[in-house]
Length: 127
Length: 131
Image 1 (cartoon, chains in turn green, red):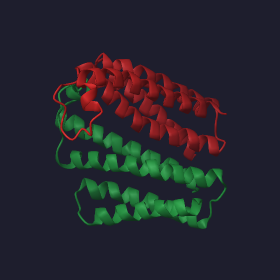
Image 2: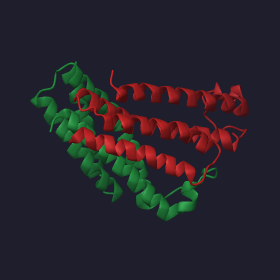
Image 3: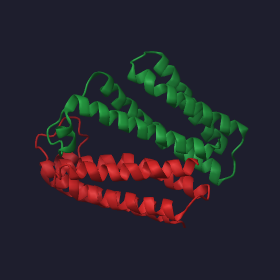
Image 4: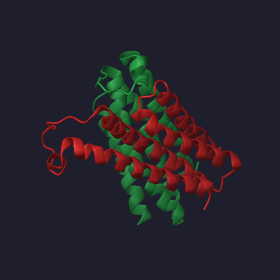
């Protein structure tokens, strides 16, 4: 796996998260509400709400991870260190989703931190 | 420049246009006094349903754009662009343009179907980038 394929794989993970959020919304809010224009605010709870928060966090992580990878690739600065950091990021984010969905405290924060640190390292490698 | 990147730039411009057609009525309805403030409190005046829908359409486009951006840049930097991926990019573009009026006019279930088309195109592009 190269950095670019890891990025594409992470994109698929975020798409999967969106899909899970839609499925949870269908269960809690009804399909009728989902396909409407949602003019009245309805909120989800429990696991679906946690998946929704995980999704928001994944989008933020994506906005930081993607430019780092693309800078490394465009500048031809990829190395074994950047590949390792990207792999750590992907594994951390894969673990993050179920850990958040099942509401496991502390572990979630640690896993998030691993992904965050890996992203920071990628930026240092890109500089 | 490959077709996927052309579409990416056009998609960003669609987002700019969506922002403008949302921001103008939002400012008129909430009042510039509120929108220029630090927004510490919820606005006293409400946005119309249509304006609020445009705001939600814009927020949805941010998510769509970040994933499509990755798909198109991954395909471009790894030289994997084909007629198939170019077609998917244009399908995404068409769906995201149609999504804004579909949301504004509350098309049901048209909006959800259009969203699914854009989502599906992105999934297929990411899979194409991987293999």
